[in-house]
Image 1 (cartoon, rainbow, N blue to C red):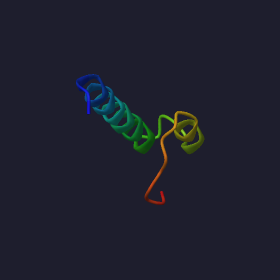
Image 2: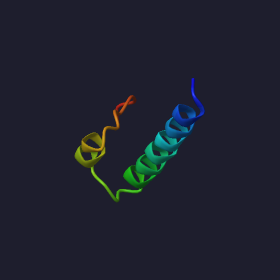
Image 3: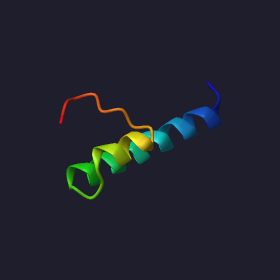
Image 4: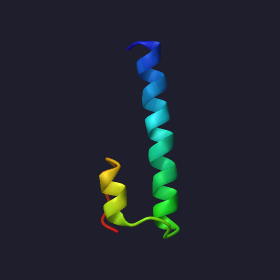
Length: 44
């Protein structure tokens, strides 16, 4: 794996994490999460 790919992957993961945080705080809806490409693994 190239360094750039790893950096991008980490960036995507942290972005996803902050999206999940705002989802669990009720700031965004499930639909908005899915529009941004975040698949919910656990049923909420």
